[in-house]
Image (tube, rainbow, N blue to C red; front, side):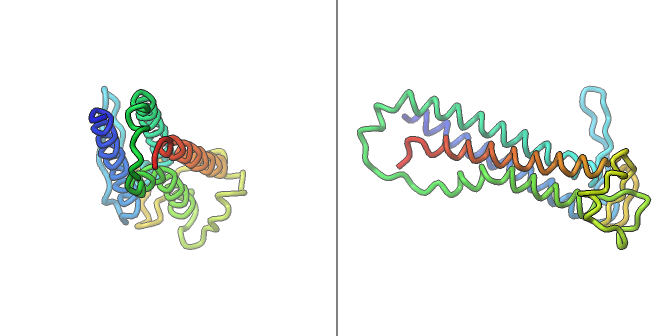
Length: 195
């Protein structure tokens, strides 16, 4: 039982760290100007970091974190099965699981946030930020061939990724829905055997 409780505590710390990462990335996407710039070098591959790249990668990172958290919850569920006999004799009510729910729901919220940032602040570079109709990111398939982008908080074009609206917009909406589904499944697993 003590080993299980240590595992659960470790999961909550790990989930909190992942959620802090998502919040940090979300905060970076709201910085104006060319304040987010630099290089990330992993195994010989160098990527130039920008707000646009964070917005483009944000929904994917959110879904991956949600899947990882679901995997960890499933591992804890297996541990619960092994100690079911031990805890079934107690009738004490467990404390509220609000913190766990908040941590498990943050990835879909972050994915939705990054999707909104994509539509609101990352537009084709040949358009003016003030004049561009954001709804075009949902229906204008003439933009789907790919274009360089501009980050509208500070009108930054340096190191901005190419975008493919509306295909990319719909992909991000689907990723937000998948993230929400995975998180709700994790919450259902988390609720098993709780008071």
